[in-house]
Length: 568
Image (cartoon, rainbow, N blue to C red; front, side, top):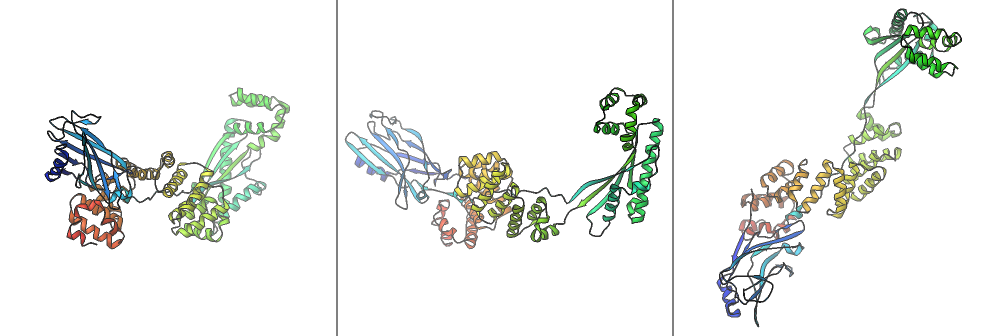
């Protein structure tokens, strides 16, 4: 619903009777239509718009009239708007010429808002002159001034808490290698005693302990043959080596009572045949004089049988390969796929308070982010900062908690520290939020920070500044992701009363400030029941609103209403 208050005043005959006596008919009659009554403050300014009319022969042909609207304030201040000069067609001067048949005119003047303008009456001072005769007359009140509803904004700039990269369950692998004799696929006793094999078996065994955080998920076996002899035989040999490795592990699993590995389905056996890729890798590691020659043969000869023959023809070199390279390729590689389960939220909460040095930065951050008690949260983050002083997220989150606790200065110091480590949208928004709160209004520096941040929170904060600037539609667009009191205020100021009412009902209908907005909407829509009920509830919540309401020009048409007066 959209409401426009229009006050029309025609300066009445008694007024001009005096004018006639003193001016010898310098001004006959002048009409004023004040577009907004009471006047309104927006963006720190007050704009007065008047649609006026000089009637036929309304000004003497030789007269000049200076017309100055003035706000006469309750504290004694007199605040003038721009003076407009009119003159008759035969008068000397640079004023607007009023023809004999009269004319309509539009007047507009904008001046900075002053606090005393909230309690004031708008009158018009007319100074007329014709020859040696002068006249100065002040009209009766033509409007009230000034509503200051935009000042009801509450700076609730939003700051951003940084998340963590904590992953409770992480996947890992652990490997071991079983080597085989030339042309063989049986697992020797000597191989089972190698360190890597023992470590893998011990790892599986320890995963079954009650306090273990390890879950062994599966076992992959990749088996190979060295590239010597017939390809088909080597293909079968690699397959047999894979099966032998699996049988060995299944036997060990049975002994240690590791139930999953008793089934073949727990294993993924992949025979790879001749391992030419491994051969190239092992040759590359050597410093043998024919290394480059061997690698060139591998590169230039695609036929594996021909490739092997050419390498065998390097008699001296082949002996070296048989001793240093080929044994490494006769193998089965065992890969244990497992996951490690991290601490539960309850365990993290305990450890961060009792033994934080055992936790990594993600675990401490996660514990702090989960904590609802701000004092405990702050303690957690400070422990994290002691251990990880160069992590911007920790400094940022300390600032967040201090901000929520009302320590804006402390928050600013923490956010500045985060900004000194890194510049990103989160920190930029938070620094700007503190600057805005401390300054009490927006400025170019703050706006620049918020525009560069481009987060939901920074857009909301920029919306607050747009309310301050009187750009209500832009504020609504910026703030539409957050239903708050200030979004309701922006909609009220944009005269979207239904939307404002819905937001208040959704988010904070019982708060004193929201009740006051509802009362204003009642006054603007001439809904006296809505006005009185909400003002009454508002005063019950916070009696300090009484002082504002009894002077608030939003309610000026109710100032003499008995029900309104009974609220105070």
